[in-house]
Image (cartoon, rainbow, N blue to C red):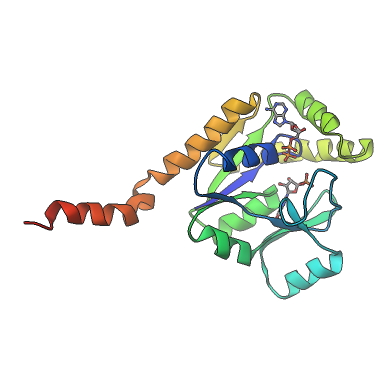
Length: 201
Ligand code: ADP
Ligand code: 5GP
């Protein structure tokens, strides 16, 4: 199953996604491609694949991306290969923006869409400042974009208010676990169980 995790910059998407990887089994993170510069805290091939604009352009031309968008002035995209490789056997979490979420919605009808928000706008400001990764003007731009992004919440299946990280993590885990119990997710598992009920008749 694909889980699309979207929300304004600084709301805690990557923190939440990272924490869930150690908590829920069989969950993978989709590593995106980006033309933005690597932050000191990030690792190539773990947080993102950092590429040049030319390389990103080639991926678009060769139709290698399942979705892509320009976000905060940089290109970001999810490769089809990442979804095929990791998403066939396991649950896959995509931390992507609203434009990307909308593209995934047209291609993967069954995907689960989760919107993360902070408790208050002021909290977003504080988190971006405390994260200390972007210049003041970049933070200002991200906050302006956040005001536009927040309006899209009704397009999502679930809303997580990330006020307390522990609570938000439990809610995300609950969404994944409940989705695994849905009738259509259980079909593969239920067949041998049903067979065992009748094989010695
Ligand atoms: P995003 O991936 O959505 O841009 P991050 O995961 O980088 O956001 O989080 C932004 C900052 O907020 C980070 O410094 C992170 O440690 C902090 N943070 C995330 N969730 C919480 C929370 N529930 N309470 C306080 N700080 C948080
Ligand atoms: P950041 O630069 O803070 O890591 O991410 C900025 C924004 O880009 C976030 O909203 C994040 O969800 C989004 N993003 C990250 N990867 C992708 C991707 O592959 N596709 C799209 N459309 N957005 C992405």
